[in-house]
Length: 451
Image 1: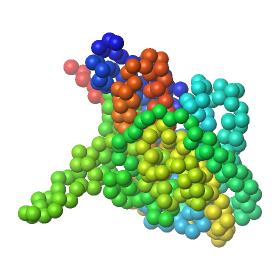
Image 2: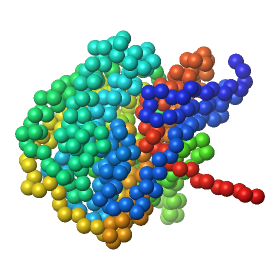
Image 3: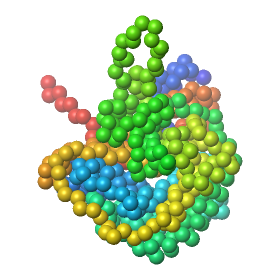
């Protein structure tokens, strides 16, 4: 084996967006792992400046066609905080219901068309559909049910148009929601069967050591609201995000890397006082968001059918093997269907579709759980509601660092594999984390030296 190797994985397939992987190895050790994200930046944060506070939700939903609800509802949470508006009751329940639809359709897309081909020896979702039609057909039905739910609540499945500051342009009738009960019961059954199926697949050994970060809301599996929590004791409001997380530019990616901010030193202790550990690493570092993190922090609050499914297939928190994240996504689909049925069962038509929301000067923070993980928005507005500044941190930006660390560990354990097999193993590692590359791209700092 040569003492020095350069491993370049071809442009990635079955991920959203464009990227490439470069690994440098010398003397049996991985010197460098780079997930090159070279998709052009899209300037959404700059595009929002000068726009009205009422436009943020519709503009940001265009960031992603797979998870537009996540961007829409995170934006609304931040803008409504500025306006001093509280959306609760049935109006809030409808937002959670819309988000359940997105979790179902997005997870179904990932599980059946992007991730399962890796486990069943296929190079694409199309090949999987040809070779295993009985596996793929229920997945397409599941995605259709999620899209139907999004269309009813949001007005359409891609880039919904019904959500607005303060609530909705139109609230659905009880009769309209009741027509979804049968399809959602079917979705729950499909998701449970899929969880049983994927739990029996062959999973390579792997373990991520990063800190888990996710929303947590006591009594509920957090989706559209909650506090930011971690496996190491963090518990903060969305407004404190910037004090605990930092973004940095790396030269090989148009997506920023988000890491935990270093903690300040502990104050001096009196003599003989017992040592109290920091809640998190004093040096900061990488952290992981997404299904594994949510399940680790919130499994006790899964919907009944999802709890039963996890127990049946032996899935227990914390699950740290990223190859097994496909199982967690299936359990979350069971949860989303069961939760949607609960919301519909409790639904009463609201007296009005929205509460008044007037512009104010201020800063607002919003955070929700996109299918791929924590999604943070921050806006500042003037007294007329004009957006002065915007910051959006996508899940993929937060997962890039632990993904590169995971790749380093996997490659070091797999260096004896032939080149093609090693490249395929690396692609599988990347797809475990389901990066949404287009969502994460930002513009790099430009320094011009004119001499």
